[in-house]
Amino acid sequence: MHNTILITGGTGYIGSHTAVELMLQGHRVVIMDNLCNSSAQVLGRLRQLCGDRFDFVQADVRNAAALDAVFTSYPIDGVIHFAGLKAVGESVAQPLRYFDNNLGSTTALLLAMAKAGVHRLVFSSSATVYGDPDQVPITEQARLQVTSPYGRTKLVCEEILRDLMAAGAHWQIAILRYFNPVGAHPSGLIGEAPNGVPNNLMPYIAQVAVGQREYLSIFGQDYPTPDGTGVRDYIHVVDLAQGHLAALDYLAREGQSITVNLGTGRGISVREMMETFSRVNHVHIAHRYTDRRPGDVAACWADTTLARERLGWQAQLGVERMCEDTWRWQSRNPRGYSDSA
Ligand code: NAD
Ligand code: UD1
Image (tube, rainbow, N blue to C red; front, top):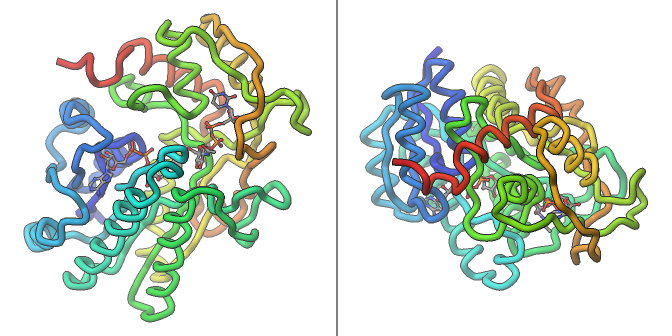
């Protein structure tokens, strides 16, 4: 069945890829974004990929009147809530901005949904809610703990959503805990375009490869991991996007809520990622080993059993595709969307 889905934060990295997958499956999409961390150029790229199957509303999700207007103008069947600020370091320096934006947007959205009688929601959470895990792979039952204001916003939003689930069975909510999203659409038309110096590994490698950064700093080589560098569960953004479709299908089919990890279940080290990028793309990645980054954990990867069993979803794309697709995007758009006409 074809639905109309509201995507908050839909011009951002994960939202834009999810919009494409939804439209390719025949759904209509309404994107609401204030463009605080994305470019309007994304809209032209989405049109190139999917035609006119979407509408764009430029507004802040904390704006109740703008939300109400969306719910009265469109027959929204479900919402995917990506909008939020996501930089861990920035959240430590500016915690109030994070609480205001991430908590404020979520409560405003839930109020508008309740008012409009729309109760189907997919929420972007993060593996950051597991903090420093007691063991890997991490199951959804693992202890929750946060180490940054950003992480706290995700945990508090999850708790708000659990309160709603407890208050009324009519809410159908999927809380998706993403591990490390990387890669880009295979067309090379959309991808991750961070502002300023990237915090995350993959965009940093890509910017070194394209000559925008001199070298990659590898944060620590004395972790208790096979090669001494940090290990993470990187997941291709197209797989992740498809996980959202599987979650919407689950909510419609089962009529009940779920909290689930979205990862590959496989750990990749910093060195392995850098070497794979270099090998498959035939580029040199200058690098230096430096001290550990404060707050980093040695290893973190997902137990993906629940996603496989309940959503019928599992990641398909491996680390080579993550590196190839990142490079196609980065080499064709060296300065992200600012190169676009
Ligand atoms: P992104 O910054 O690329 O996208 C977020 C979008 O939300 C941006 O387009 C931004 O302009 C918009 N936005 C922010 N606040 C808004 C507001 N108040 N009103 C309207 N629009 C607003 O980030 P992303 O990587 O696509 O992440 C999407 C979601 O997934 C976020 O909630 C993030 O915390 C979560 N997440 C991301 C990662 C990751 O590594 N990328 C990992 C785990 C969870
Ligand atoms: C970061 C966030 C986390 C968020 C996740 C997914 C922090 C402390 N945590 O986690 O909240 O959910 O991204 O987006 O920021 N590395 C280098 N050199 C670099 C960059 C990274 O060696 O220039 C290493 C890191 O030490 C780590 C790995 O690469 O071992 C991955 O780092 P990163 O991409 O920042 O993701 P996380 O640390 O998992």
